[in-house]
Structure formats: structure tokens, C-alpha cells
Length: 367
Ligand SMILES: NC(=O)C1=CN([C@@H]2O[C@H](COP(=O)(O)OP(=O)(O)OC[C@H]3O[C@@H](n4cnc5c(N)ncnc54)[C@H](OP(=O)(O)O)[C@@H]3O)[C@@H](O)[C@H]2O)C=CC1
Ligand SMILES: Nc1nc(=O)c2c([nH]1)NC[C@@H]1CN(c3ccc(C(=O)N[C@@H](CCC(=O)O)C(=O)O)cc3)C=[N+]21
Image 1 (cartoon, protein in one colour):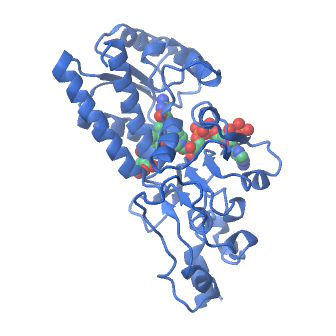
Image 2: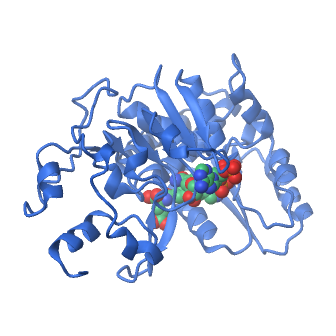
């Protein structure tokens, strides 16, 4: 059975279950009610002439009913976060050069990393590289896992007082013996380029107030929607996840953009039903492929924040990264989607550079 052409096609199309349940998934019905309407509505886009990467199913064999149905009409816009991040970074580069040339100031970003988590070390390395290319001076402190809270607080205090430093980022998660709230609270609000200080979050939540900084990942999500001309005002948005660093600020930002926002979390009843009402979905859960095709309203726009390593023996690293949304199913229903990798991730780094530039400009009163 496993070798029949139909089964093989299904394996190819449906790649969304964790390895242990992959065998069962091969036999999931692929043509659920949500997948009958293949013509993706692009009504959410102001400007349909925006450059599009179209994925069509026409490359699949016509020997299967599934492919026959899809071949004619399915199209989805792939939101290219890597490309947008590059554009943003080019704009930042130009501004940094202008500032340096006119007032001689180079923005500085300090990053504090505690412990030896591999993923954290990779992000910090990537941030450092991005700073170098942008012309931002980076200051890095790497402390061992068993450092004390006082040591971290001392570095923060020194960076708070250092006029060369315009942004301070404490890489999360911190080791469990440290009080995250106390540490994030110690970063002076004018240098809080992550936007995690409670005052910044509070201002984000209040009407008529402006935070000094907007957290990078949610800011990157909204920037992607703007640059792809996705209308937010008046739309129904669902944010899946309510963490302080992604889900909650993403919901606040969408609300500031006049979307009607629902938040789905681990205690939500009927998450599928609620998510299916959304014109815009931001998924930030940390569960590989949790959002299936059946959760998505035809024509919805999907921003997939999740970054989840899943075992993959064919990959030289032994794993690959997948999002919280089952991409293979989602592209048949959504009108636009961010891929993982290459979607929100690069935008997070671009927004960090953007916040650092903003901070340097504000501190130096440079317009
Ligand atoms: N692309 C990027 O730049 C970034 C990507 N990420 C990625 O985004 C994902 C989320 O990160 P983060 O917000 O830090 O994660 P957290 O673990 O802090 O938060 C996860 C959220 O998802 C909710 N949740 C968990 N299980 C379910 C479920 N079954 N159904 C509905 N909601 C659920 C939790 O609900 P509850 O509150 O009830 O516990 C919680 O609010 C991760 O994959 C992370 O790697 C994170 C930061 C940046
Ligand atoms: N104080 C703090 N601020 C953060 O912003 C912060 C943090 N702590 N802790 C961890 C999360 C995670 N995060 C990512 C940033 C970039 C990518 C990224 O560039 N990802 C690439 C893939 C990279 C790869 O291939 O490994 C992509 O999605 O294309 C991912 C994740 C920031 N975070």
C-alpha cells in the first residue's frame, strides 16, 4: 500500500505531521470541505499588482483527482520575508550612513547572552553579522549558565550608562534561576530595542500612547502585511499564542491597526473554529504544523511565526525548520503565507536594526 502512486502523492502533498504520526497522516482525507474552494480570494490586498511569487499545483501529475482539482486554480502569494528584510536593511544602511556623515554618530547595539543554548548562540551570531553589514557597532557579552543575576544586572547598568550603546538586548530565554522580569525591567527604557520593558508594553496596550519601541517580531509581522498591501483595518484577525514577546504584542498591534482581534491560547475551546473565521492569522505557538488546512478560511493571509526544528535525516543538519502552520495544506487555501524559514525570522532581525537606528536617532535628536 505504501508504494501505491496515490499514497506516494499524498505523502508528497501532506508533510505536516510529526515523524511518529506520519504513517497515519498518509491516509488523512486531503480534500476536506475547506479545500474544495481553490480560488484564493485576493480581496485583502489593496494592490494586486505587487510582485508575486505564485505557487501553482500544475506541476503535479494529472493522474490524481487531487492534482486535477488543484492544477487549474490554486495560487498563493508567498510573502518573501527574506526579500523584504533585505529591502528594510538597505533603507537602514542608507540612514546610518546619512547619520554618520552628518553628526558622526554610529549606532551601537549590546547583546547579552547567558548560557550555552545552541539556538540562542546562533541568533546572537546572526544579529552580530547583521549589525556589521548595517554599520551598527555591536557589543557582545557571553556569560556562563551559572552566572548570577547580579552579574547580568551589572552589565545592563554599564550599558545603560554607555553613550556609545543605543540598544540593549538580553537574549531570552534566561536560565531558570534568573528573574526575567527583574532583568528586563533593568534595561533603561530609552535603550529597550526589544520593546520588552513593561512600560513599553503598557504603552503599546493603551490608546493614545506611543511606545518608545515596538517588539521586533510582531513589528516584523505587521511590516510584512503593510509591504504586501494587506488591508488590516476592519478585518478579523486571530493570533494564536499570547506570549509577552510575540502573541500578546502582535494582538495589540493588530488592534492598533483597527483589526478585530481574537486570541487563541492553550485553554481555548474550539481553536479550529475560531481560527477559521480569520481574514488574517498570526500563528506563534511553537507547535510544528499545528494549524491545518481545515483551520483556514479560503483567502486568509497567514503569518507563521513558529520556528520548530523537526527531525530530517535527508538534511545535512539532521533536522529542518517548520512553522506552526502546515504549509503544504495552507497554500491550497490561503491567499498569502509566510514560509519558514525565510518569512518572519529575517524580519525580526531587520526590525532589531531598525529599532537600534531609531534609538540612536532619538538619543542624538537626529531627524
Ligand atoms: N520568527 C521569529 O523571529 C520568532 C519565532 N519565534 C517562534 O515562535 C513560536 C512561539 O514563540 P513564543 O511566543 O516565544 O512561545 P511561548 O512558548 O512563550 O508561547 C506559546 C504560546 O502558544 C500557546 N499555546 C501552546 N500550545 C497551544 C495550543 N495547543 N493551542 C493554542 N495555543 C497554544 C501558549 O498558550 P498559554 O499562554 O495558554 O500557555 C502560549 O501563549 C516558537 O516556535 C518560537 O520559536 C519566537 C520568537 C521570534
Ligand atoms: N531578547 C530576545 N529577542 C528576540 O528577538 C529573541 C529572543 N530573545 N530569543 C529567541 C527569539 C527567536 N528569535 C529569532 C530571530 C531570528 C530568526 C531567524 O532569522 N530565523 C531564520 C532561520 C534561521 C536558521 O536557519 O536557523 C528564518 O526564519 O528564516 C529566528 C528566531 C528572536 N528571538
